[in-house]
Every structure is written in C-alpha cells, then in structure tokens.
Image (cartoon, rainbow over all chains, first blue to last red; front, side, top):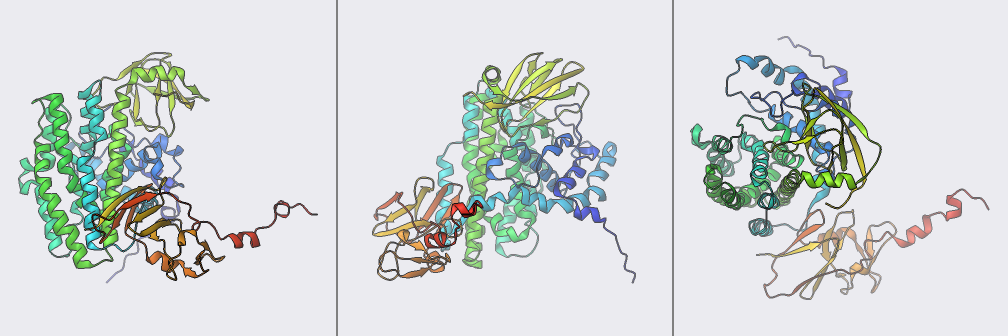
Length: 463
Length: 130
C-alpha cells in the first residue's frame, strides 16, 4: 500500500480569519453583477469583497453588534459556507453553470472554507455564551416549565415585524420584505435539520425524522415545504429561485438561519439544537396564524398562503412531537446533565428569533419612511464624508453601516434601493437621505456614473 | 410544576418567595440566584463580604465563613438572556407570595481588606517619590 502525502500550504493555516475570509470573497463567484436581484444561479452571490477590508474580524461580534455591517458581512459569508455543504442545483439545469458549480464546490474554495468556518462561527456566535446563562439545579420539570413559559409568551406576544407591516404606508412592499426574509430559510427549508438525522439515537431520532418528512412533503415534490413556499412567492409575482433576494437578506434573519446550521454542524451541540428546534416548532404555528391574518387584510385572496396554512396546522403537531418525543424524552433518558443544554438551546433560539423580528421591523419602518429620512438628513450634524463611486454597469451590492450616515448624491443620478419589490428612491445631485445604523441599502447608478458621499452622523435627530 | 418569575436584572436583584429570600450572586461575573441564608444561623449572605482570596463569604451575623462553592450550590434554576432572567421555582405552592425587589448586595463587591492591603497609595502608584 502506498501512502500519498498531501502537502497543505502553510499559509492556509497561519493566515488570520480576516485574510482567509478575504481570499474566499475575492473569488469571482462573489463579486456580484449589475442586477439588483440575483439570477437563477445558486453559486453566485454578492459578498461585497471591496468592503471586507473595513471589517475587524479580530473582535468577535457581541449581541450589540447584531445589526452592524460586520455582522451582515460575516453572516452572509457564514451562510454561504453552510450552503456549500448542501446540494444546490439550478432549476433550469446545470449546462450553462457547470463551471460555477465546479468552482463553488471545488477544492480551492472548500479548503478555504474548511480552514475558516470554525473561526468564523466563533466570531459570529461566541456572543451567545455571554448573552445566555442557565444556572441552578435544572430538572425535567424545570425544563418543561421554562419551555411552557417561553412558548406561551410567544403565542400571546406581538410580532414586531408583522406590526410594522400592518402600520406601513406601503403594506404590500413591507409584506414582501418579510417574505424575502423568510425566503432565506423557506427556499432551502430543513437543510440544517437534515444534519441531525444521521447516527443512532433511538426513538428521538425517529421523532425528528417524522418532522423532517413533513417538511419534505412525504417525498411528493408538490407538497414539499420549499415548493409551497415558492408558490407563495409566485402569487406575489416574486422570484422563486435560490437566492434571488440575496442582497436584501438582513443581518438578523441571516444570523437566525445560520444559528440552526451552527448548532447542527457540531454534534457536541446536539442538545442545544434539540432545545432550539423544539422552541422553533412550537412558536411557528401561532406565528403563522398571525401572519395569515395580516396578509389576508392586505391582499385578500390575492396571495397564496398555503405555506402558512400548512405551518399553522402541521407545526401544532411538530410542537407537540418535539416537546414530548424529543425535548422531554432526551431529558428523561440522558439525565440532568443534558437539561441545561436543552434549556440553553431554547433560550438561544428565542434570543435569535428576536433578532429576526427586530431587524426586519426596523428595515420595514425605514424603507417605508424615506421622505422623512430626507428631512432628517438635513437636520443631522455630520462628520467628514467618504466618497463612493458607482457606475450603471458596475456590480450592485447592498450594505449597512455600524452607525448612522447621511448619504448625499454628489454627481450623477442614482436610485436608492431599500427593498426588493418597492420602487427605489430616485436621487439627483444634492439629494440626501439619513440611513440609520444597521439599515440595508444599495445605490444603483442611473446615469453612467455617479458619486455619493457618506457622512457619519455625529448627532442624530429624533425620527 | 415550577413557578416562573421574570426579572429585569438592571432593576432587580432579589426574589422573596414566602419566607425565603434569594439574591443575585455573581462570583464569576455570571449571575446566579442563590439562597440568602447563612447555613449557621440564617444570616443574610447578601450582606456578607468576600474573604481576601475571594473564595468564601463572611456572614455579617457571626463571621461564619461560607465557601462560595457551597453558596453556588444553593442556586435555583434560572435562565438569563441579556438583562432578563427567567427564574423557575420548583415546588412552590401557587398561593405562596413572590416579590421581586432591589436591595444592596455586598457579597458581589471585591474583597475590601485585600484592596486596602495590596493597592499602592496613589502617590507611589504615580511614581512620585517623597
């Protein structure tokens, strides 16, 4: 037998997280194109390589950073890493995209990804260790009491994002923004869950599998949850391919989606995953009931809510199955040592679910009130500006800023894009808009070229 | 079934459950809700001070030294998420009154004697020679 030695370039292990991340995002797959929405090519997604130099990867994210640009960029990258470990094939067939397929799953990017992913996970999710503590003598009864408390609270509580939709000046656009955030998971649903199906862990494994086969429509493609999610998007005349709306995914929803991959990639975190998925399944049913109400009020019968109806129904069963046959069964069988981990998973899922809601609500409110943010721009005190150039043929990308900025168009004409389906805000020379911290936007040059200035806000007026 | 109490840790640090009292103890910077009762004669450990090595609490009543590890073992189930704590009190009857309050906790202060003994006086620390 011959042993082949494979030499690993030393640089691959000694480079910093920042350098490895930059090497990855500089791949041509991730440089974007001039279109606002991504085409039907799951391998290409805008990771804005030109902005990575400004991101400090040496300082892990904290909970306060959840809507910073560091968080948005890191979670875009982490989500790409996770999806590189799933099978993505374009609906129209691979013929034209064979090269992209080979590059996306190829050795070069895979080595970079494998050398980076654990550090990037620590960067993105170590904050959960600071944010959540479980202490005291936690028994199965305590676990169940906690679970009942947080799920009751969710059922009786408000959804900030749905409230923002209901209150919006343009509720249709706001409702679409919410669908965009759901699309992140909705178009690849249960991919993270699939990682915990393998192995041998008894009846609890079979219970989880029951949920999984519901997600996958019992092998019937037309009833698969991703299929009926796409049907909902189609009824709103929205694109249904992975990931048409990449540029509009927000940091909070990206973090939420990545969280389930994060827990399921490392089986040492299995009990946390079990807690998290139990919480998610339990709160989905009432959340979709609320969503149906808001969407029917806005669209009447002009939207296909089969996906929401399905979840409002089946997640009642999933909530019961996960609680009784996964959560409590694991606790009973494996003893008090795993109960804190199960509780931690519940608490973390509740926390990151809040990030999804708050971030989506804030984006909806901002995108709905751009005229007001023009006025606020005029009243804001700002610091030294930074110029940015854009061309009509150049790559389009979106971003946010860690602090509020005033964007002033200096030359040319451009569209300020703040939502996937709403009319963009046309800007001409001298126009200014206040962009609050964390709000995602893109600038699309309408004239062949334009230049805009980003002024950091020193003293933000009250919205 | 456990009784559930939700506490904002920015505003509250003590839970009164019938005749029992629990306080937020942060021996390692992470909050635990522990029994406010010295095992000797029931003195208020929340008003105790840490020994210079930080490993024990000195009860204000009789000077009994109680190991922080033992105090930690009295902690009741609690899940903290940010500044919110969900306290789960097993075996507490539904009619038992529960109150959440704020009071001064001395047990979380750094050891007083240790500070006084080891910290250089400001003049010397600044490099000023007499």
